[in-house]
Figure 1: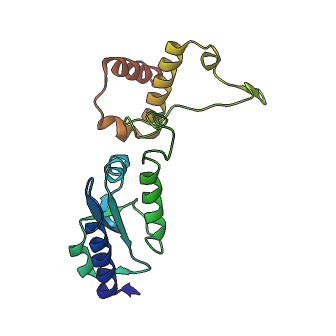
Figure 2: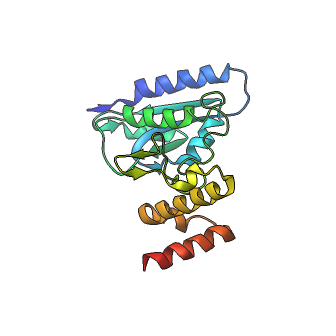
Length: 189
């Protein structure tokens, strides 16, 4: 089953005419969900969150008539796998974008999350301080903000190095981060 171009393009035309009649603060983008698209990432989510209008178009089963793609601004993919339809991918994109909109989440609370600074986030802990013999790292209970900051940075770098080293290749390191990575590399040997 392939989605026909006429109903999809009629819907896109209607959505665009609605956005043209809306007071403009920014801009609009139409994006088709497709495995052939650019990989969606946090940088794209931040860009989309700045838009006045985001139109996501998704196919189902075999996809959409190829002629549809020449009418959209972008083609995006959420990863290298196939779903039965683009609805779940569009929901993932929507969720990533909506949480960045003002008022969706407390301001500043997303600044240290995974991918926001090019690293995976440091480990998180909660109560109790010891559970079945496993303890929260003592530094986190110390109340010493600078030591906690350094521990979080080190653990963020460690986690990224172990689980997603590709992220480190794309990131410019501060002198502090480079020094920590050097020590982590020596520890691994």
